[in-house]
Image (cartoon, rainbow, N blue to C red):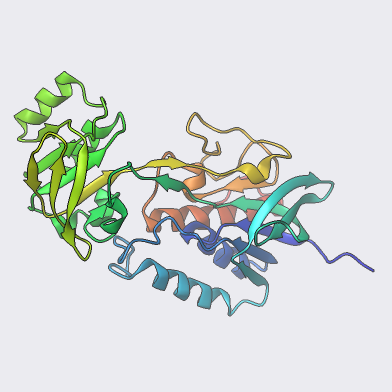
Length: 309
């Protein structure tokens, strides 16, 4: 029995970076396999913003449109609700074990593009997920326009919370920062924020008040209750590169794959784009652009052109 021919490129992850890369690779006559677990980080988001010609379109609709476009290319294959459980180097490139819960099939590819994105962990605030993606958001550039001028909250436990508050002040002069008991804002930062009209509340949050995803007030353990019209939360983000256990390219302090400006890792034939290779979540259009850039580089590397233009 003969082994199937290897794919030219295995794309791990079917978000905007992975699907954009697959489209451009397909158009370059590459034989492509996209493996997507169907667990997008923005699943809770009702509408995505900032994507030219698709501003306000739900993320799931963007994915549907992208997959439909890929379906017109016979050299691009998509495996949905599948995971790459292991990835190993081989004489001809890479072998990957793929399956739903555990690997049940082995495929080979000459090159691999990692576009797995990020997993996020929200602060442990009661019922926060009941408002997330509807009136509480994580990306100011994506969603602050709709909340401009309103009384907003910023909830977080990260050391960059004061910086996030300064950013959100571009859209509103009515902002309260809630640290949920975490000691993450210095007295100097609190004084600076106060001079800009921003209040910092350090007590733990005991309840988010509202109906049908619309946040109306935040109750604190010290007895205070503050009216708000929505706001932002600062999640923690993690990468999942466990499938690279057979070998490990360089990663930064936050666990992102280290690449050059074109998406190449320090492992020949292994590339990364999107959130997996960035210091934090990107807007969809930025991730899609990174995927397209990586696709061009993969094609040029395959034929021995050092730099893609």
